[in-house]
Length: 131
Image (cartoon, rainbow, N blue to C red; front, top):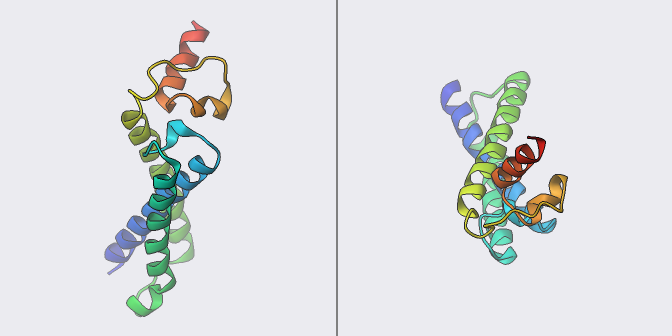
């Protein structure tokens, strides 16, 4: 029973995490992290990706009356799942946007560079500067 509960929890947190990352990227104009070129699609995607999992999580005890995930296990699962959601977002957005941002903007630094380039383009540009 625990394996099933933890798997459901991981899926729900992953979906919500990706949705929150998309909403934050759209709000802060970090176009290199967006899955969609238009902000409106990103906001809609974020609403669906966070709304559905949150509805299930708020109704969790009704669906799973027996069996719970203990606090320490829930914390570990949440942290690991959010790290996975972050890596998934960085990877997928870099693959989707590689043609959209053909030339990275070297004038911006830090997170601001994600406004005009993807994460992997930013890393490549950073390591090129060091050498």
